[in-house]
Length: 353
Image (tube, rainbow, N blue to C red; front, side):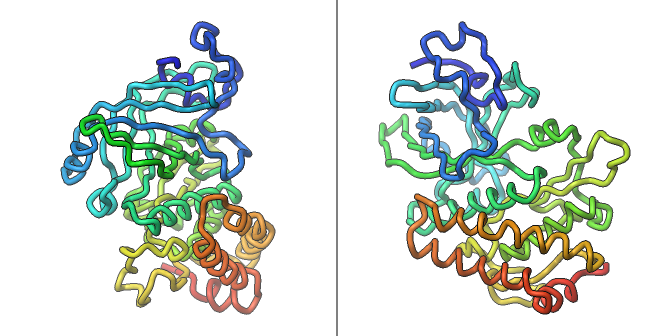
């Protein structure tokens, strides 16, 4: 096995990599963390070794310190890459609620040579929260939600599914394999879209790019998500194009664990919305012309079967979870694709202020 830097593992759109890095490891030259057009079920096997007790203890800290860790990426039966990294718990609610919190994986400012994505130093790792099978299924549903949004727009967080083994370096325990996924860094999105990051707080939604905002708003309705806000910068990031003629910021949603499609046991809707369950859909987007709405409705109708197939064809979701997810989405698509229903449930419910 080769111990090396994340230059090998996380390079996006790699054309070539210097030979001394890949000595004896020719298969690594085509490896990419985020692969365009890869199968949604393309899984990468990983081992993460660290002090599990320290990680669980630090998740209660407001600003936890990084702790040393070691990651092994298994690229094939014969090839693997080993990395010294640092990790710490992240998030707000999930960091405190989950026995196994989401994680920041820090790899210390590696320069991505032969890449269009610049220099980055950390990635978000979305984990399984708790050991019960229902939590693992919910994490997978959230992963497929990111894949759904990728089908609609390039202004989206790319993901990579992992089958990951967490090894406790203190107690020498290996609790077995679980699924997780890496989430693309916002800097990477900005660079591949020739854009810059923006502060999302105090940004009124009416100032956003209308096309991208409408796609996001309808998408949030389709998955039953009310846990987001542009104005307070909650679960929405913004980027602005370097093209001066394309000045309106583009929204990029993330963190979908509170949506009705996931239907997590801990998810409750805000009281002000007047709904009893997160599975109830409510449109929270701003008003558009009928023509603008119809363009987006048609987009969802066109992508309907491909989105449903993410769940129907999943190798990792159990039968019950598949059936519930498909049924929920089919009802959403029925509303979006029906003129009267889309008018009463979305168009007539849009916000004016």
